Image (cartoon, rainbow, N blue to C red):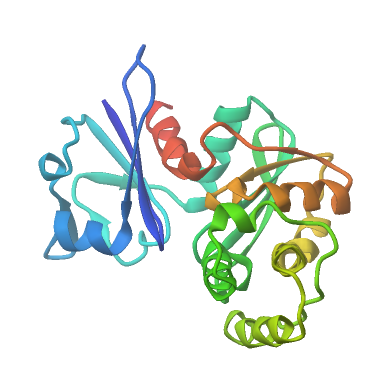
Length: 251
């Protein structure tokens, strides 16, 4: 049994792969995961797999937001870029595309040719182009994320480039009397505007969209329209990094 672990900023994603059997996936809140199932011993983090209710594993590969601060005991580590590239190629079967991964607090864009990385850009300096931004803005509107992800038509113009000041700007638009639908569309367009410059630099005819934000269907439609490209969302976009870890182990 191979175990791939993606230590995300918001969630820890685990993929389990056993030859000839279906994938098995698990997700845990990051803080809860560290508090309840991890113990630091020396410079390593020891995971209580039995406490997690997971089967015993033969090989562990880790990646993700937390990999630079914590070494998982008994695990090999690979860079996020490699993990997400391998996961996207494995899930889609594509060899030439641009990969857009929008996670809880960062964004990654990778240009892939012949299944290999040609170039990449990342943004982990600000949460304004991430899932955390969407969560905060949905809370301001008083709606769920799945409701937010339905709207892309007639967006209200939102110009703040900061996740914190963006909330203040949104409150101002609410006071002006704009509808929830148009405000939600404006929020989704804001995410696109944050990553648009990187997407244009690393553009392809096909874009593979992964990460938790890939569940936002409005953003998918916005990207297809504005970038004039085909957008492919794998079956398990949120577990793409963990899947890539397993693929790396298998190789």
